[in-house]
Length: 109
Image 1 (cartoon, helix red, strand yellow):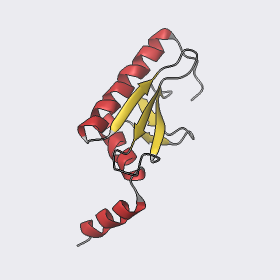
Image 2 (image 1 turned 90 degrees about the horizontal axis):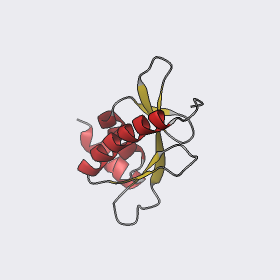
Image 3 (image 1 turned 30 degrees about the vertical axis):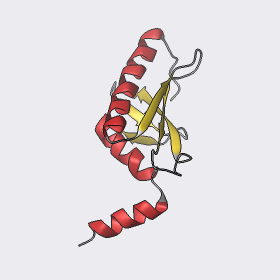
Image 4 (image 1 turned 120 degrees about the vertical axis):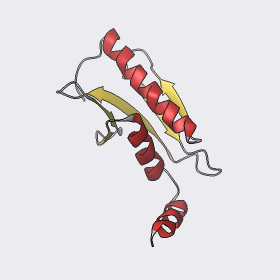
């Protein structure tokens, strides 16, 4: 995640973050695009459940060397290449542990 920001690249980044925001919003989550001058645009995604507001994170998007794009956690770990898959992973990671255990238990045969 080291390529320099240009206006065109920033615009492409915003488009990709907007697509992720739409996926998260469609699933009932809150997502706010942030593009402060001089900083990489990011998407602030947070859990809408009561009492779970702290379960939030900034998400970044950046092109890879081969020209494809990928979503990233702020600690530079890749999430996914598509908005739908990234939204699924973000929701799974940022849900309360109690809900995660309940969902995993319900999915077992």
